[in-house]
Length: 312
Ligand code: FES
Image (cartoon, rainbow, N blue to C red; front, side, top):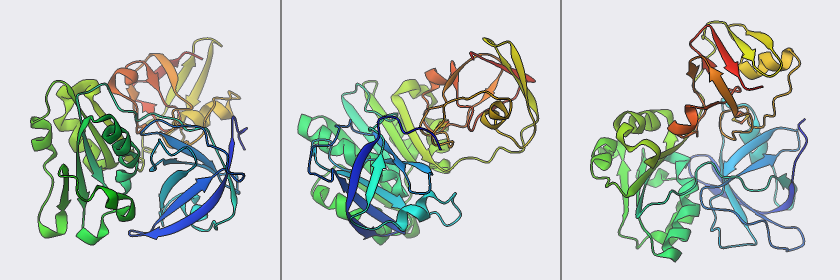
């Protein structure tokens, strides 16, 4: 198990059942002390009793210094983290990391959010911040059924906000991301959080937005069919072969190189490494286009060239 750097001890004070097999956890300091502060859009690494580490977006108000809230959807076909989370009980001690943020608010006059399913969670920490600062925003929520909108209890306080739009696909009311993007002005940013299909749609239609398009997606595209390649390590002068079916991170470990990693799912950027040559295939879920020109996440990404050179 990785060393826990800067872990924060929290106690699970409540677990609330939500729709779509989601549980909402409220965490506090066991002795009632304030918790380390966080910025809107931040997430926590959760250190599970089994040693698994999982990342979940904070969905509480950053101005509340005594509580963290996270929402966890059970993934039946997942890697075990969500089912372990769902088996935790109120009163248990849960170590977490300091809040980290790869999905922060940009410098914009108006922020436009698109949420699919549990992708609503990071926006739930952004809305209170923007409302308190009187900065304009607009939220588009997509769900299959009206009663299946995730985190309804947390959305309740925004019921009277006129700038929340709901799209229920089962009623034939689908969001056109293209239409939303076509109305975005030069001083506005778009944020999209949801399944791969939604993010792909935003990426295809939002190319012109550049770094004004922010996204966080769920699920990793499977990539074990990539051809074998080699990694050239500039500083050590070593060459590591990555066979078909193995991750770059896995191959580096086998060769004895200890690259820091946490989520191993392209979310936390703990493994983010500068690349110097080669053609990367980026499969992280969070890096901005400008970052992708310089960095790669070896836990999920690979390359389409015969070799890739890393600054290691
Ligand atoms: S370990 Fe989290 S992005 Fe690679």
